[in-house]
Length: 337
Image (cartoon, rainbow, N blue to C red; front, top):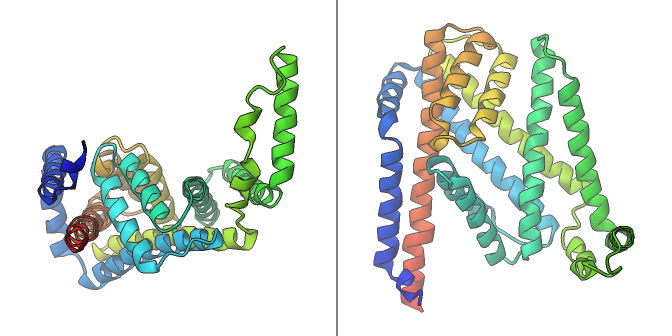
């Protein structure tokens, strides 16, 4: 029934439709590309090179986090494949409405192709998200401390403690699967008795839980290493933003740049527009002025250069990677079979 989807012409057609949808979604922001090109021509090429370098390092660190987590569960994956998957998934996530869901499904499917079980692939999504949030909270706390801002750090400290507690709980549950299953079963039976329901109602859903938990037994040192890679990824992006500000002639406060980046990143999570075009740029520009202590004109130029690199350039590279690995090479493999 679905054999027509295997046709290379159908695949190319779907890719063309996706790219056409991308162009249509960006039609109201075409000026962004023109202004970005003008800002790039005026910028210091030495610092642009630094920004490009750290843009690449960002994706490398992201891939290292994936490799570290998967290796700890016994799934062997090469760094090249992890980097290719990260770039391709980022292009889907950043450029299309609903892209994050497609990117998550793509990562899930590829990890299963590498030998990960559905449980491991699902837990990767959860743990990687927690690590990313923990890294952002940690950097935010450090930036607030060095900025000497009036923002009270209690909320950030509480979030870090909470995230560490969750990671420790995940690690403990994976090391004690029988205890977790027994406790949950006992609690469920108690609830069923309290609600006058059959005592064994839904207990079958918990059967096999210990096997699933054993599959994701990630030691705390491995979690710590993955957290390090996740945090370094954010650091690399902050260095990229700093280099963009310096490239256009700014002399920013480093802690202010860090907080500006984190604020813009949080706004971008909503994915209201492709790549957060609009809301992210406004937040980045305004916070660079307020926290980075640079003039508005330089903040606008820096934001344009930064977004040209971390959004346009990364998305373009990601689509090239996707076309090569998931369209052209897939077609070649089918010809061989």
